[in-house]
Image (cartoon, helix red, strand yellow):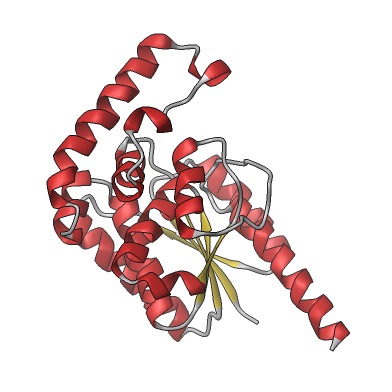
Length: 229
């Protein structure tokens, strides 16, 4: 009945406008959140954003966000036990050798630093240093605790949810992944969550577009179910 899209992070004006326009067409409100740099503050922001929307009557949330750092990949590698090199691009996606090497080093070094904190979520988020991942974890976990459905859009969001699942495995029953992705870390995280994305578009934007489109599909499915009843 009332769907809301929460977009985390510093997205460009162009992407924000596109997201807002699409959401308006489908009568979905958009809440943009500039995430604080502190992971602790970001986690609290995610929790508060979920509370605010649920208190206002939202019965389903789209959670989206973008993060260009290695943090989401590091977290997925650590929580799934997949070696960093297995999450790196291959073939045509790995044509820039210097960039591939830099990414490999960042992922390898990031996992090494994070590994000792595997069972300390707060310290792990602080070490990762990704406000978007921290905010996503706070929002996804809070929504699950309040029995509110969430559509996860983008690698940082799925990575944050994966951390929550590691803490409280029952939380996953309140989530669904919006779209497939060309990013190996995203695919591995989705496998770990034992989910099948609603869409297979590989949008990869993390700006809410895939989540909003996925929500339109869910609404259509619900309408068909009601008609069948």
